[in-house]
Amino acid sequence: MSNPNRQSVIIKGVGSYAPPKVVTNDDLSKVVETSDEWIRTRTGIRERRIAADNETTSDMAAKAAQEAILNAGISPQDIDLVIVATVTPDMPFPNTACFVQAKLGLRKVPAFDVEAACSGFLYALDVAEGMLRTGRYRNALVIGAEKLSSITNWQDRTTCVLFGDGAGAVVLSVVDEPGVGILNTMLGADGSETGILCVPGGGSASPSTVETIERSLHYIQMQGNQVFKIAVRVMCNSATEILNSTGYTADDVSLVIPHQANNRIIEALAQRLEIGLERFKINLDRYGNTSAASIPIALAEAHRNGRMKKGDLVLMVAFGGGLTWAASLIKWQ
Ligand code: UT7
Image (cartoon, rainbow, N blue to C red; front, side, top):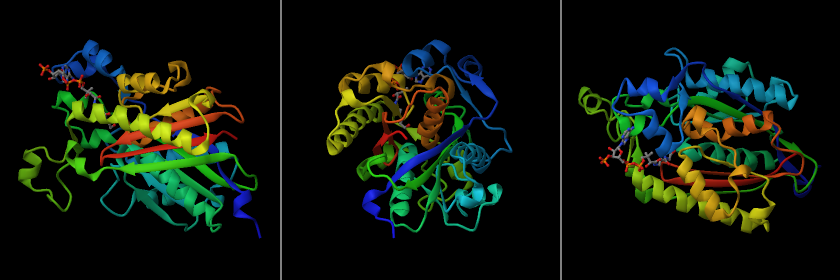
């Protein structure tokens, strides 16, 4: 029998997928009253990827997952568990993970979605780690995938310039070595602020009708200013808490992978944590905010660019609708 205290859960493989279609700020300025200058200076975004009309969240998730499985050096048949974090499932049900399982020809393993908006990937990571630690599963596929273009109001300049589509995935595996991989993950939520970032229509509270559609209730609605202020505070708090919980300090961190929502949020976080921006992975300029996909896309890109080496401390920190927040500290393997 293996001893769970002497085991760790590591990120064994990473992958990502972004649809080929690039939409620049100038492209958007032809659709709504905005400008490249406004979008760049207020957010840091230059362009975003937009999925094809017939391309689903599970299509993108499956492509990212395929790359992660290949990168992990395992076979699809070795996957014991599939979790997809998304706010843009292919359908209200069945869950997106079931579509992914079928598309990849995986075994009939548990497959389900986690919804915690932009914090979703780290929530899913924590759920998967817990399940792996029971000893009943060895390799989990954890995916963040979004087709935010499907819930974006392309006539609302205050939101449509912010979001993009894509997917990122990791293979989590149990290894018989203590103190490596995921050192800790901390999650939080404040349900008193559900209204400042939401899609109000289409659920049981307000099922889709001609009227809800006419009132654009099936699109993302956000009070950007309020979200911004809370985001800086809670991301900073959760990053600090996770460092304290593991006995590390900001100086020990090699790379921060923050949720990519706004450069100004990331800059404020860097300043408060006293971690130089050169130790942050930022790709918001090319993808915009891809919600649950943002951290795993950035992680896969950082890996591809050789930004993590064995033993490096990687801090991932997210914030999103709910409100939800999460941080995870990893010793890279
Ligand atoms: O991933 C989940 C978490 N989400 C976030 O973290 C998003 C957090 N919030 C933000 O990133 C920022 O609040 C925004 C980028 C959404 C907005 O930036 P802001 O500096 O808070 O701008 P604002 O909403 O206060 O708007 C300033 C002005 C307004 O005009 P007035 O009222 O001052 O005349 C807006 O109407 O900018 C106007 N505006 C625009 N102008 C040109 C808003 N959107 C646009 C636009 N182009 N796209």
